Image 1 (cartoon, rainbow, N blue to C red):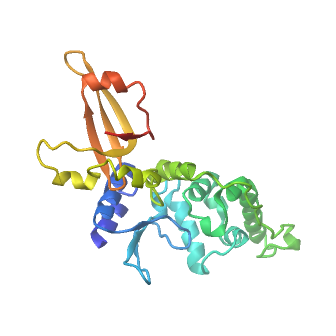
Image 2: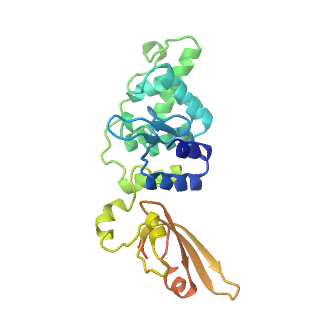
Image 3: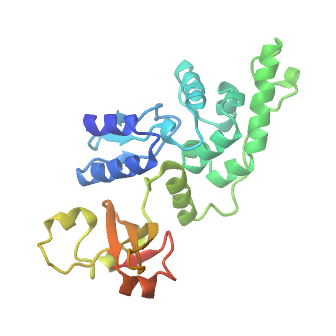
Length: 272
């Protein structure tokens, strides 16, 4: 567990390696937990749990668009006080001028602020949250009240309206994939596991146990598609699938490639 945590921290800015190492963690039986402002550090860390084995907590520094300076601003505020409990508490203690809209938006999208409210509601209120935090810290700098209040002209009400409809789960997973490089909280294959179990012979981690020449059936979500032209001019391709346990590299030769290449696309779930 310590070794995998260290590897993830060293390569936290390389999404491809993070995805591979997280797949390795899952094969080894280690849980990887989503980033959270009240639990994550800059790097990946080991998190002890009361009724379950220790897990690896995703580092905030591994979230795309979130720089080290922004993370340190959040962590400094958390360490000087306690866990963040409400949005106004977060905006009052974290100088969001040093975090920025893009970084804050990315943290919200990957679920790091789920403890403070619904993602869609916080995203809809992002400008107001940033403005109130900025006004609060400007007021402190000129010697006005150190808390939201009348003398600064700043309201302390940052309650966001309940979302009419939360972001669809598939879209949330898309944000995770885009900003973390890997699905953490769930996987697009999860709703199909029961049906796939009836036809899939091997998941990615089990392919090493297949015998030479054995016919296998696998399923996964398409991550990468790379067309290729042979020296003889024939078209073929390489396709990377991701299943619940890791990655599967497919070589698609010309005859099959000519039949399927026109409908292959990223995020498509396929059976092979």
